Picture 1 (cartoon, helix red, strand yellow):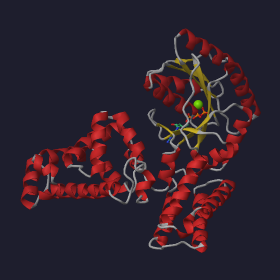
Picture 2 (cartoon, protein in one colour; picture 1 turned 90 degrees about the vertical axis):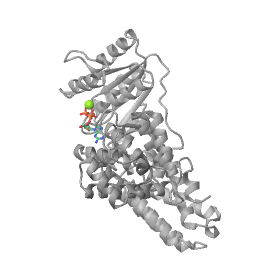
Picture 3 (cartoon, protein in one colour; picture 1 turned 180 degrees about the vertical axis):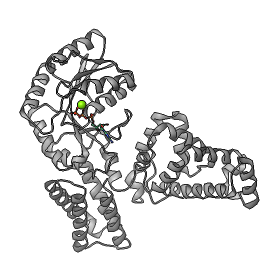
Picture 4 (cartoon, helix red, strand yellow; picture 1 turned 45 degrees about the horizontal axis):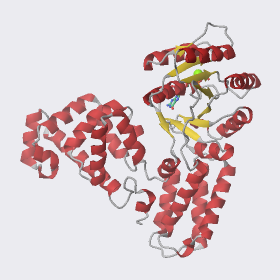
Length: 445
Ligand SMILES: Nc1nc2c(ncn2[C@@H]2O[C@H](COP(=O)(O)OP(=O)(O)OP(=O)(O)O)[C@@H](O)[C@H]2O)c(=O)[nH]1
Ligand SMILES: [Mg+2]
């Protein structure tokens, strides 16, 4: 998502590189690019207009026109404005009541049921005891879907016989949560193809009786502009507290995040990033802004790694990546970990310029290849694993023999590894920000 915005902004900085000052004409060109990029990313045109106007205002109000690194200063202005539109802070769920109710609302197919299960997983990780409640009486298979998900993640699902009204299910669910000592009840509700009165009335009634601590509007990021109207309609009738943007792993142009937030003022609480029950990420406005700007999202990446693998190990790996001490040994242990973490492309998308690496890793995960790589690395001496540059022709032949592979396989692995190292140098070197260094590092300040 937002590739074109990143690309265009990079184009702007390229063009302005080396210029000591930026003219108003330069600024006009830059702002036109930004406007086009945002429109291409499917951001609502009103939001785009406002956005560009604000960036211009800021640009005029600062000493940008005489400043150093003008291209980078424009990137910084855009970054700051993005953070402002996306919301300066993370939205934390407020779940103080015992039990608290989290109500999932949204159109059909938006991802309510899936997100309900994902949220249960996440809350349980935080030490909570969730209960899922199946109050979608509109679609016949909806209850079964939630029950299956509940089975899969080991969270109890409260159901009532067919024919029970949704409000009644919600009420008895709350009672069951209380009796069962659950501290949070996640209520899955029915969606419709379009915003319709019957659905709204029912949701309003349920919300009136249960007074949810959080009402999360689940929106499919792929629906683009339409999602703004949908969000406005829900927000007008229900006490929506936050948004969940699903299918951010797809090829959604991502404008929805900017548009909805801007149009409704509602905070984005989570991003849905896959069909699996672990595909839910807390939303960090500053990180998304950085991702949009092509600065990658090393923090999210490290967090994701830490959630799924031994955290001490992950920290060491991240540290080594940052310090550019990543060795073949680290690579080997990463391959094993990566298998546990799910779709690689998705993880790698968070890292700037990492698509090559994703290719290499994806290839490696196909298990035959993986075994071969492991065998090759195992046939190296510890010295060779730390310093692959010493592996010349005769060593390559020995390693190939020892691992039962061909010299060509060894060559390929070493080549891929060198490519990876180059990328990592970019993360840790001056071109891209160090972890925690953020934009300051990018701007060389
Ligand atoms: N790729 C991807 N797919 C998702 C995500 N969230 C949900 N889905 C898929 O989207 C489809 C619809 O999801 P549901 O959770 O059933 O949607 P719903 O809002 O409950 O739909 P109704 O119950 O019909 O109103 C399913 O195939 C999900 O697997 C996501 O973040 N990424
Ligand atoms: Mg559903």
